[in-house]
Image 1 (spheres, rainbow, N blue to C red):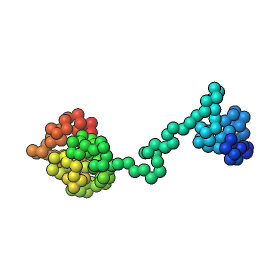
Image 2: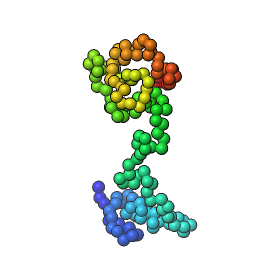
Image 3: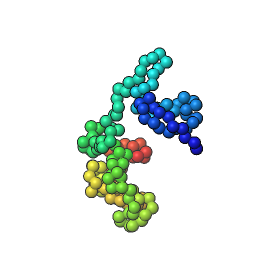
Image 4: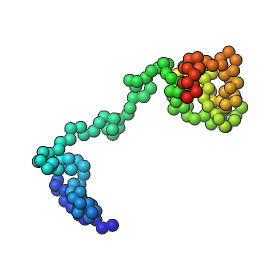
Length: 152
């Protein structure tokens, strides 16, 4: 497609499409120049107040884990605890008891649901059911509530 050479009000030459020039849009070489040089019909000029928010700045690293101001420690929901485990341990590939690869999920060994990565093991649905049977059955429901466990 044909390009047209245009000179920005800042003096910088740049190329743009002819259709942009005919519609009055191909005037500025950059967005910064647009805000610096364009004027409102009333004659008022624009000014940039914030150039770059901190979380968009190059090299900015967001606080994670205990450094984050929203960190809740062990006072966490069932869903967020399992999301935290997946973020640190990844998605389980195979059951650690039978070696099955279908329906593998993270199971809590101690049934205390603490933020301890060593307290979670990858189990298939069948092995997870056997693990949660007996006296420990329903420990997650007692701690987090029925809806949290069913929806989590």
